[in-house]
Amino acid sequence: MAGSLRIWPPERSKLAALYYLGSGPEICASDQILYLGAASGTTVSFIADYAGVIYAVEIAPEPLVMLLEVCNIKKNIIPIPADAALPLTYAPLVSRVDLLYQDIAQKEQVKIVLKNLFFLKPGGSLILMLKTRSVASQQEPEEICSNAVSELLNAGLAEIKVTWLNKYHRDHAAIICKKLEK
Ligand code: SAM
Image (cartoon, rainbow, N blue to C red; front, side):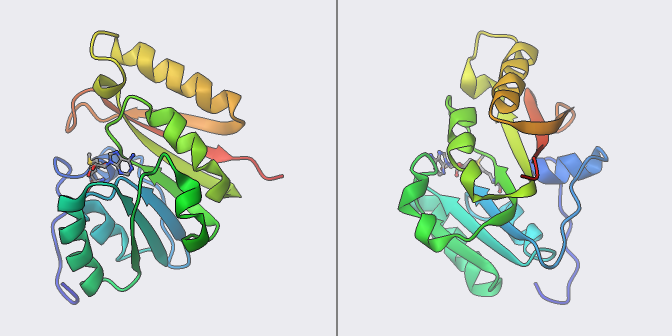
């Protein structure tokens, strides 16, 4: 992959979709990133071209096999086979990060990301790819998103910006916010 250009399709990656919609974050070569829900490493492999270190947490064994193959090529990805709902199990492996990114299709998506907030440096950014249908299939996506935003605000996060990814990923919202400087 080194030295070749790859197409990053917005239909295959919520982060790519966010960039296509003009709201993607700036990622710097020095950035440390904690990525929850790495799956087989599709999006992680693209971020690895721009970031310093990516701690890639994934719970399911099957995608982990492919993620490990990606890690063999991209040496700045640290694979962590773990449950993101249990951050203390991998806390010794992860340093404080500039960006906390979560793409996990679970009912408790917001609770899981908040449990991992202590990894984020003050001033750092959080991106939550909210799959509203996983939270509640019968509730309106806008209402689910608005509840998620309230929870993030209550947890002390600020500068919250919501971008709906419906053009590429139905009923998904990208929620971007900041952890305040102390
Ligand atoms: N972010 C990936 C990408 O763009 O390439 C796709 C992620 S996929 C939508 C969600 C992933 O989250 C799945 O691989 C799933 O196994 C993982 N996952 C679900 N619950 C998890 C948990 N509690 N801890 C860690 N990973 C989890």
